[in-house]
Length: 392
Image 1: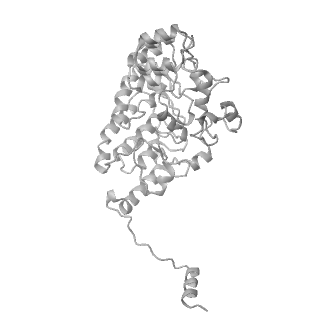
Image 2: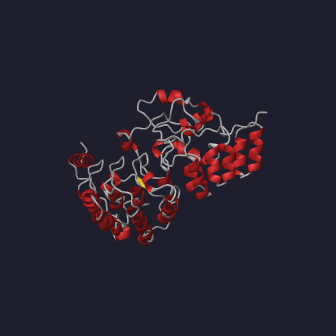
Image 3: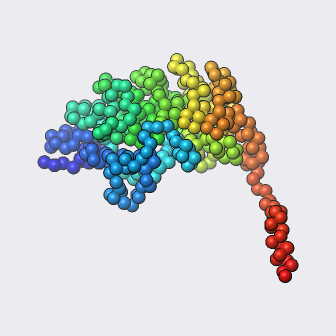
């Protein structure tokens, strides 16, 4: 009997182990979808591909054909063209049109990923007893690229470990069960490579609060030590993420050029006081990371060549105590005064301009941008005026 694969997903999301058992007996696809469906979905997230026609997804090209027309590998560091064309985006949010599809089609995914998010170990056991593909997630060491031919697990946008840590039903029991089953705790999903995030940085995905990162980090660290944290596809370490702000100083040109990632959406009723309310939790997270016993490099650079201090210096409301804390660390002063980013600015230079500009232009700090425009005085303009007032 041919059972539609999406029914398996529905049963998992309904947290019905009995229905999953029945569907598997009826020989439903335990992975959720055919490999062709996973390929078509992942093709929407390929870098440097042609524009996506969201109104004609059925007419889109095959993944292999799109890849054949892309000259650069998907896993290369961010290119100069991507740097030049990239806008300011939330770190956790996508900058491509395809990212919106995740909201439009939230139910699409690998059955093991969905089961891990359910928190039900019995559900996961039923699927692990089948031939549902998990090859990408159990590879040691972690694979650095999607294999050819691709597998369903390698094309996924998330992983069971990620969902166990930060899904709707966060479950340390599920995390430990997956680790015992041989899942690699340091596998970043590569289905959407520019937004690829290893498990530890994934802890705060979708949550802009520093408190969540600190508390969940301590809980997860017992099973996945921080030495497995790794960096995101954009080169962000845990320190980078902890130093990101939800608002940058847009009046400062060096900040606008340098900072392209936000921690989360700015609060609607933001103010200096609202921003400062997050400082104690941010300090707690930074102190936790720095005292963890695993080296957290203050001078580490992401693909924009920004250090964690660059992000602190570019905030609209600067956490000065956080800057002092990081400058006190090994290589802290070097990172502050000497390490330049892609645009050849040090963190200190961004900080200095931020302080100068905000007093003149940022209304939060008493500045104003309401200035009377002056008429141009160029010679060409004067000549035109003379011609109009003295016609021949």
